[in-house]
Amino acid sequence: MTLPLMPKATAVWLIDKTALTFEQVADFCGMHPLEVQAIADGEVAQGIMGYDPVANSQVTAADITRCEADPNARLRILASAVPATKKTRGGRYTPVAKRNDRPDAIAFLLRNYPQLSELQLSKLLGTTKETIQKVRERSHWNSPNIKPRDPVILGLCKQSDLNEAISQANDRLLKEGRQVPPPPPPMTEHDAA
Image 1 (cartoon, rainbow, N blue to C red):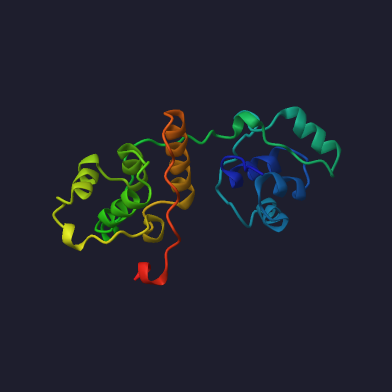
Image 2: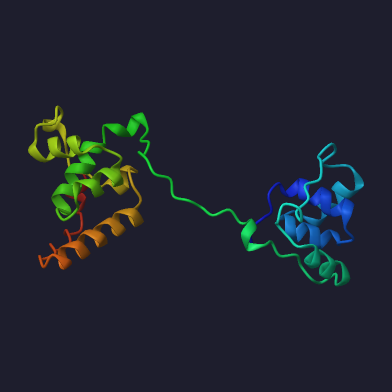
């Protein structure tokens, strides 16, 4: 269940302004009933101003009244109070320690999944098209030392993201009427070394 904004401040307001049971307040705010009781006794959350969930469209006054009449009823947070998660755009940060692994991951993806576009590769690995091109043409400054290694194992992308990109690339090839390349063979211990 989604919790209200500022759960402790919401609990303070509900304790002060309503006749809800400690269990009802605890369930709504994602707290333990003993913690709610401690707030009511003034042992916890001293000085915290109450946060009105009705005024902030997290719960309706009618829902509070319904729950005050029935101790077994539970408050429900309004769907409009749940913040929509938005996907952020922009470059992916790669820690300094893993940046030298990027060319290895690019080489792995170019060798095993040639259907991936440069745009997909750059989004997956947080790299530039220029770097991908240099690895492809073997003109990268560190070309002699590049060994193709799985980007998931290196921690540069998630397996789910890689699978999604491969699926999109395969769908694109099918729409264009081209043949989808076979999946790469499983890695052996010799390949991993």
